[in-house]
Image (cartoon, rainbow, N blue to C red; front, side, top):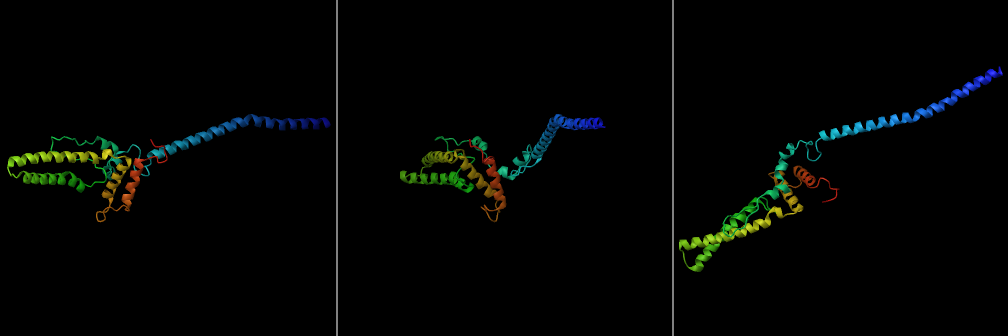
Length: 225
């Protein structure tokens, strides 16, 4: 009977001692499979997030990646001016032998269309006319040939001065802040209520400001060039 009990106890010890060995051998494989599964799940979630991000409209500009036509055809894009457009615009030429005034496409310093017309059309014409009258009085003659000659010469001089002013006031001479100022001025003019012009507090104007700021500096925390 004692021998039977010893044999039973030995079998019990053998069976229990085998469990830790099996557990130790299978644990690394189980853990590796678990880590691999978790990694795959993380990658799948990341891929889904990337796809969702590609299909999601930009929170500021309002269009999806690759759908640039929505931006180029919108009112804001048509109002704003870019550095590329400014640099590709024609530069007013200087010639003392020409009476043609070449106005710049884009003006700096927030010059309005009315002020632009005054500077490059009205004032040169008035100056030419006034000098012609003064020359007529100084010479004491009213001969048409003389007056025409003086008038043409004066007109060329005034055109040269106006073209010099145009080159100075060209927006291509502005820095980034100058271009930003011009774009904000355009946004205010375009999106203010007609009955309340220059309304910088209007939501449409504020939204245009936000878009303009993002376009000028899409990474405000990045290192400037």
